Structures are given as C-alpha cells and as structure tokens.
Image (cartoon, rainbow, N blue to C red; front, side, top):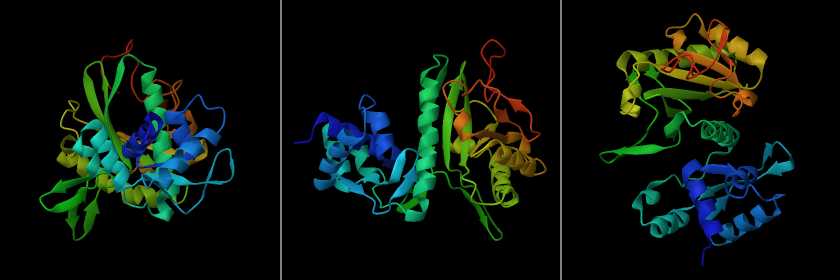
Length: 287
C-alpha cells in the first residue's frame, strides 16, 4: 500500500516531470537532515514500478559522484489519478527523458523552484500558471508541444521557450517566457536563433493563446544564465535584434526570495539593471 510520503513524491514528479534526489527532498522532505531517507522512499517507488530512475548520473551541487534523476511511470500516474479521482494525471508526461537534456531540464526546474519559493514570500504576487517545454496538448488526434508555435516552414520560423509563467501583480496578469542558458552555445548564435521567434510571437499576440487570462498586452522573455559576464554579453547580443525591449537577463543565483522579482538584478538589453516587476509603492502595474 502506498504511503502519503509516496503520494507526495509521485505528485511532485507529475508536476515537474524530472527531478533529482535533492530536488525531491527540497519539495517533499525539507526536514530531512540528509538524503538517506529520501533515497529510501524513492527506492521503494522504483521497486514498485511507480517511478523510474534514469540510468545516467548527472553532476549536481553537493553530489560528489553524481546524482540520479527520477520520473513518473504510467503506473504511477494511474495511482495518482485513482488517489485524487482526477483522470488528468493519466495524461502527464511519463516518457523516458533524453540523456542529453537532463541537465537542461533540471536547471529549468531549479529556476521554477526558486521562483515559486520567492513568490510564496510575497503576499502581493500570484503565480497563476506555469508551463514547461515538455508539456503537451492534444489537437484532434495530434499531440503537440504546448509552448512551440510553428509560424512557417519555408523558411522555418518558430518559437520554443523553455518555460512560461503567468504572474499577477495588483490585478495585472503578465506572461513571462523563460530561456534557461547553461553557457553551452555562443551568445550571437542564441540571439540570432531566438529573437526572430519571439518577435513573431509578439506580432501575433501568441502569448494570449498560451495564457488567455493575461491582461497585459506585452510579455517578457526572462533569460536565466550562469554568471554576470555571460548575462551582459547576452544582453549586448540581443540589443540590435527585433523586439529586444521584451528581454530581461538575470544570473541564476540572483533568482532568490530576496531578489525576485523586486531586486535590481534584471538587465535590459541596454545593460541597465532594474527590477523584473516594479514594487507596489512605485507603480500599480507590471514592469
């Protein structure tokens, strides 16, 4: 019989798709002093066929020899659907994640966890929705990625955010797209490949198709990167691209409850550091 601890882990994996042990512990067992108890819970779920452990070990802060990643099985999704009497759990992503995407997807979830923790500290901000690139929708008999609009095929033009969220401040609901940069590609290449898609998304008001509850006409593209020099270079590379005013750039370690979203750590393309959102005592809307 599955325990409430097991259900908590399954629900976390249904929500985030892919997590490593420290992230599971952070979400489900923050009171654990070390990872031993969390690993025991995960091992029981793996043996029961409710959770899969990826064969690839990945480097993660504080994990000396590498860390395994975990994701939900269809059997685990069915257990959640039965437990909560909600068939939507049956449609969550249970595919084995690609080995070359593990670090990228874990980084996206790390950003998400940091943003969720930060927003929880502010009573005047609400996180209304979050979508990640691996989430899918069904259109007719065809399965499509929710955040991947294909505008044209010849020449190809599309937009592929890593994630997106809807933030509400003082009644204003604005869409923010996330680009998670791990310093694996050149800044000019990133700017040339990413900017046209977001420019076309802006021109078509495509963000309102992703988030119909948004009531702010524009959206923000939040680029989360590895260090300040990289952040500055990305901003400079985007500056001469169309719709560069949509972009903000921030270092991963600055996405914290102390800095998000009111800290002056979010660079515009002109390399000016400002808050992502104007503090309530300065404005009534979203920056």
